[in-house]
Length: 179
Image (spheres, rainbow, N blue to C red):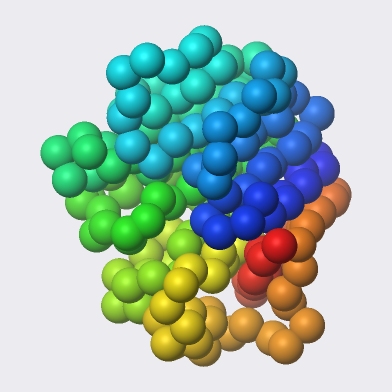
């Protein structure tokens, strides 16, 4: 297991492992034909490698589940790639229902926009991931509140994070992903 998470700026990032790369919430249109692109809101006209709707997908060995919020107008994703179960939450953060949490299952890596501190804190506690990756938004106060709750250390900000070998057995690794 080796996954690399790289910031694309803003709330966009890339997740690369042995299977197809994922480009999640890209700040601009991506031309990478090999990557699976996950968008935060449904779009009608997309090509084959773009996912923007709630539902179940399997592309290139990557299992993806789109979770709809606000009556399907916003989409977060659960993706299993290289044996790691990841949750990619879209912004603005939404409360998750018990059914949505059940569908999500056990999450190894939670990637979360640092907005809506109360919602973020509840989601971090509910998902209880081994690795938490925060994506700083425009609201510095919201980020600071979430970072404090999550236990962000001064040296945890990076533009690229590599998950090699196994997940942390105890505790939680917290990373701030910023370009």
